[in-house]
Structures are given as structure tokens and as C-alpha cells.
Image 1 (cartoon, rainbow, N blue to C red):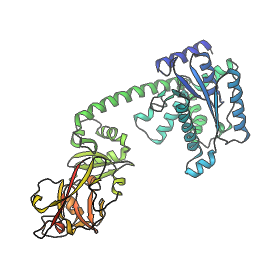
Image 2: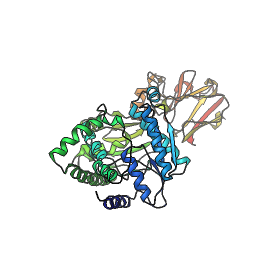
Image 3: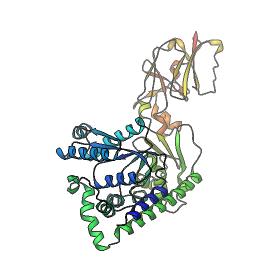
Image 4: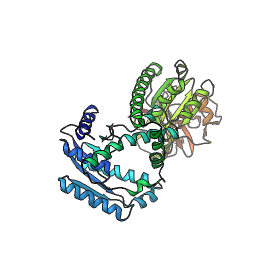
Amino acid sequence: MNNYSFEKRFEKFVSDEKLFSADTKVLLALSGGVDSVVLLNLFLRSNVKFAAAHCNFQLRSFESDEDEQFVMKICSDHGVPLFVKKFETESFAKSNKISIQEAARALRYDWFTALLTQEKFDMIATAHHLDDSIETVLFNLSNGCGISGLHGILPKNAENKLIRPLMFASKKEIMGFASENGIDFREDSSNSSDKYSRNLIRHHVLPVLEAINQGFVDNFARNIRNFKETEALQQFAIEKIKTEISEELSADELLKINLEAIFDFPSSLTVLFELIKPYGFNRNQAEQILDQAHNPESALYHAEFYLINRNYKKLTVFNKADKIAQTEINIIEGESEVLVNDRQKLIFEIITKEQFDCHPKNKNLAFFDADKIDFPLLLRYYRNGDSFSPFGMSGKLKKLSSFFKDEKIPEYKRSMVPLLVSDSKIIWVIGYRSSIDFLVSNDTNKVLKISLVES
């Protein structure tokens, strides 16, 4: 292998991908394997400012300690600052009920991120290479993926401050560079095990594909570049479509789109999926939404942290209100202000009967016979089975779920409507209707006025 060519390709890749500059301070993840040691060697030949970090996961008995000693020596020989940390990986995996691989990854990146802040590094460099990216694409394809699963491992993740400067090179090229330059490294015995899915791909799938076509790696690298460009073009189109079909948002809405308009575009399923994917919704849910798009009944769709409400041919995304729905606040007599949420508060006043407006048109105002109210009041949210006697219904008890439906309050909002309760009775569905049981009458001596205002 021509060393000059390999080094120049490295420099060109770093420059083209804008991975680092002369002022960048890089933390190199150094395992002691051939990939990370070659990357250290390339860093030593360049003008990058860097230090190394080594994780001892204590998973391979004495081998793990020997890796640590090897890394310490190589860094000492070349004057490279080194950070080392031992991890109780198995106990961490067990206590968090995750796999050893997941545990090692979490421990590694949490520590790297902490070092990034403490030692004022700009980027974390890992030694992922082209074969790793190809394995990732094949793994994603085997599990099912969209276009974003086909770009492989990206050279740079600005959000997580990760760079992968060896992504231009195959494993064969890296091994060749190490051999020609007499670079010593450690072999991880776990890499020979087939118990991990990626090792199965590495040991049994890639060799077959390379036997079919000796240019497989180079061809696949071109495919990955094509996939990346196709993905970028798709995202450009999706953002343009989003502006065309989005509607004005209220304070609690994250995305609101005209569901009917989606059918005007080719690949409407892909369009909808790409719009809702950032909120944790999957392709099956997108397909379900389109299948039910013309159903007049409203429906809710759940992701971990978000809700989609399909109602009146509109699709709206919200933050889940689970935590809001669990909130309960006791209000003692004499309190003048109480926060309802981060945007609104209640104002309590005692006024005379003469100051009372018996026909308030403002739904954010409510008036009650103060002597009928039992403190402390309770501010809470909807529970199954809730009912009250709405003003205007002659004292008839009505289920709160039916009241919400009559008021055309969408399902997604019902768990976010605050309720004011006195002695287990709902006195006010805040912002909508008060209960007739506590109204001001001719016998009222003093009036409790409650206002819902912006905080």
C-alpha cells in the first residue's frame, strides 16, 4: 500500500467532511485494536491536538488489563495524554436490565461526554471504518428500515460531537497500513465470536458478497453515498410539503396538518411517516392513520412521549399529558394566586354581591356562593367516571366525558382540562362551565370570584 496515498486520502476525507481543523481539540477513543491505533498514528502525523481515552470494561479477565497496559505504553511512548477508566460493566447491565453491548456503549459514551465537558474537548473521535458502515446497512436492511437506515454510519454527528475519520477506509486497507508501517496492536478475542449479530455479518455475509464481486466494498461505498444524496433530496421534499400542508398552531400543538392534502402527493404513506417519525411514531401507525383518514370518528395514536389526534380530517401532534393528568394541587382558603401550568394561573377574590355580574360572557371567569364552598379546594384533572351538574342544565348530573363531547373538546385535550373540586364535587370545568350547585343566588352574602389568566 502506498502510505502517501492512504495519508492523503485521510487528509482529504477530514477536509471534505469538515471533521476538524488545526484549532480543534479531539478526544480519541483508543481501545488498542488495529483501527484505533492506526487512527492514533494518523493523528500523530497530522497537526490535530488530541488526547486518548481508554475504557476497561473488565469483560475478558486478564486480556482487558493487558489492553489497558498496552494503551498506556503506546501513549507514553508518543507523549499522548491518556485517560483510563475501569467499569463494572456486567453489574451495570444486570441492574439496568440491558445487554452487555448496550451497557458498554452507554458507559463509554457517558464517560466520553463527561470528559468532553470537563477537559474542554471539541470532538470525540472513534475508529469506525467503511466495513462497519456496510455492516450497519446490511443489519438495518435485515431488520427493515427506511431510507435513513441506508446511509450507514455518518462521518460526523455534530449534535453528539462525534467524528469518524476512518470512514473512508476499508478494514483491509487499515490492516495493510498497519502492516506496512509496523504498527503493533491488540486483538480482541470477542471479535471472533459469532454470538453477536454484527459478527455474523462480518464473518459470514461479507465474505460471500466479496466472493461474488471482488469490488463489493467499493461498490457498496458508492451505494451508501447515493443513499445519502437520495435521503437529502427526500428530506428537502418533505420539508417543502410540510410547509404546504401545515396549519397554524395553538400554544400546545407541535404539528398540525391537513390530512386530506397528504393524498395529493405521490407516496403519501412515506410523506406522512417522515412527518411524524421525529415524534416517535412508526410506519405502521402512519399506515393506520391513512387507512382511517376518512372515518368520521376521531382517534388517538400514541408514541412514548407524544400523541396524535385525528379529528375533522386534521392531524395534530401534542406532548403527552400523562404527567399533567396526575397533578393535584390543594388550595387553602385565603390563597390569592395558584399556578395551573407554566402558562396560566387562577386568581381568587372575595367580592360583594353588588360587584357580581350575573351574566358573565367570559369563560375564564367563574362566580360562586362563597358560603357553599368548602376549603381546601382541589385542582386536578379528568378521572374516569367524573360527573357534574353544568350550569344551564337545570341541575341534571352529566358525565364529564359526555360534556367534553358536547363541547367538541378533542380527546387529546380532555386530559389537559383543569378541574376545580370542592368536597369531591366539581365546581368548575376551568375555562368551560361552572356547576349549578354552587351558583350565586338571592341568599348569597359574599361571592368568590375566580379568574383564569395568563401567568
